[in-house]
Image 1 (cartoon, rainbow over the protein chains, first blue to last red):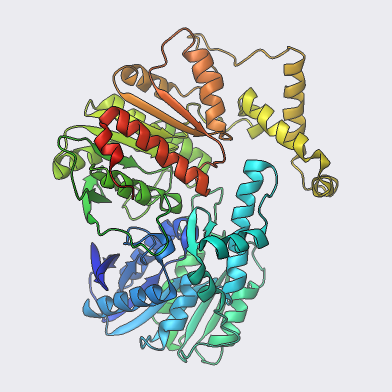
Image 2 (image 1 turned 45 degrees about the horizontal axis):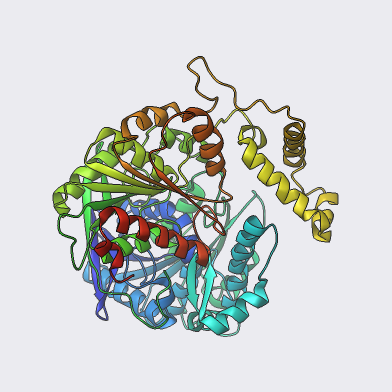
Length: 277
Length: 325
């Protein structure tokens, strides 16, 4: 059963979607979405993954951070504090729904955020898909889309990265794919560096690195997150699967192939305890 | 469009509605205006192509709150097989799916959504709007149901996607020339030559757009081929059927980006050939400095300004004068 609801958070609302399994077993997965346009592209795969997890007996909660999806606020009103507040409120809601054991899942930057909150929320395990280890690198790559848009509009770049960042200091806002990122959030995200400041979480974690071709090594970001934050736990895994980069536009509609769904479902269905993968 | 930094968004009266269509449960969000326009229409936003009810850069959320601030209730929802809806699509190949949408893949879902929206929001008249695939679905819905009295369509595609021909061959002459001019503009840039000499340029596209331009300069362009019924090759016949039922009945506002390929199809084929000698009962606005999704700041601001002006003229100055979101 899937239930859509608006959950009150600090006087505002976030959209939640609760997936309840036919037979619940007291374990739940909180899904933290990717950011900005990456959330749009991963949307259908996230829906399918939530249904697959519920089919495996897990209670699943998805939610939209304020400034994203159907939740309150504009994108530029989002801050790290609201991201944390939303995530914590959603975790509490999932526990209310019967999840005595809490797991966290996150796509891309949502994975990084989930990892940062896992210890405080008492998560039993985490599973992350291609999490960026450093916010500054992530933002600089995201800025490419602004440059690409300029190329298509003007056959050249009128405002390069440095100029865009200078504009942000003047106006307070930076346009990435049509989303307005506030300078304060930009600075907060840019300061995130899992290698320099490893998160407190000491439990098991799966990092799923989706790569273009069969036999390719894990992407550098996933490897760095795994080594700096999760490799110390014996049940942790760094898993590599060939799959389209579903957080960007592709020639096929990205609904989440088995290469994405199976490792995540296996992990939360018991792999996190250290059993055979 | 961009609210002053630090000013929080207004609290909204929004409700999730889950309804049935074709055996699938489809979720949508109904936004109720804080100060409803008496006897005003509702706004049904139809999702763009395969993207869900939120749209690129939350465009549909921005639009919903924009219309609500002008006193109009808004409903946006997920088509089956997309977003949070149930169901699966017939294929995962994006061009094939776009072709399916242009033949009416989501027509039934749109009709079911219209019923739910009218009932729950208490409206009898509806403006249907959408981007790209959403615009064409809006046209089908207007053709099917007289409650749809107006369409606000962004980047409306009027030609089918010819999967048998490559991109350079299926685009309109105007768009081909536009692309060629872009290549010419790059001639003075060293990085363009480096890319060209390193084997990373789209040589086929350069060659074909160049030869088409030369043919144009030599006066050897013949225009689109016509079938036995006089319809230009590649036109979407499903759209043309819908057009015959909405033209002159529904208020129509088409908004295109200047560099949008669909704009060249609309102007070069639909207007020049299909509507030759006929009325053009619509308003069309072309925005510069905009991509397909209206992502740049200027595009977002221009888009809402155009809609605001149109709403004020057709639905009363009071609606347009309301405080902007």
